[in-house]
Length: 107
Length: 122
Image (cartoon, rainbow over all chains, first blue to last red; front, side, top):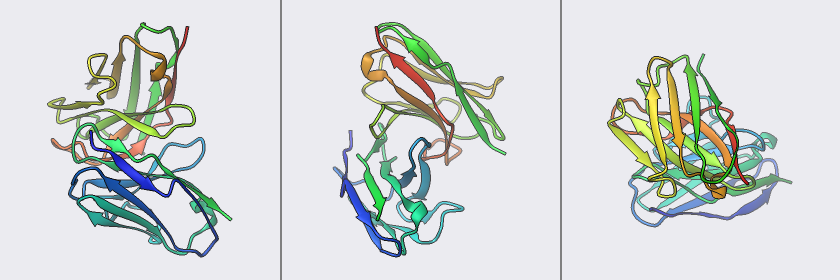
């Protein structure tokens, strides 16, 4: 199975900051990757698909980049509601695999 | 308006079986790929299974292969997960999710239910 390695595992940032989360695949996955936000007690919410396409209704401060093995999720101008845990998920092949998550805390 | 409602979870002893159901409304489960994703307490999500293209494309996580079966019930517009030989490590909140894509590819889950809790314990 393809392993997805996220970094950092946690971070703390202030409102207005720019934040970048990285996801690395153990083998090339083209751009078959999505990013999710999960708040406590809630289901994950799709933010980005095909590595860089913004899901409908998601604020434009979220953006994604990458192809092959290295991917990033960037949040520009962090807002209080952006707290939660962020996960990448590859759908290049079976089994689909998640990264281990990045817990984002707002200072 | 789209909705996914999971049911069938509960407490079960190791080695026993359980069937989860996910009733969809606002769309047809045969028109989109569908997924099961689980999340153990305090852990990240784990993709369990996906089904697409009238069940011609089915995928399962290695940890559940040979024990879990995924299917759809068109008449009830539902996604099903039949789970056999349950283990303690199967304890999790099981989410049903709609896939982004129609057709053969599974794609990513883009709309999720609220989950049903499965506890496997003696």
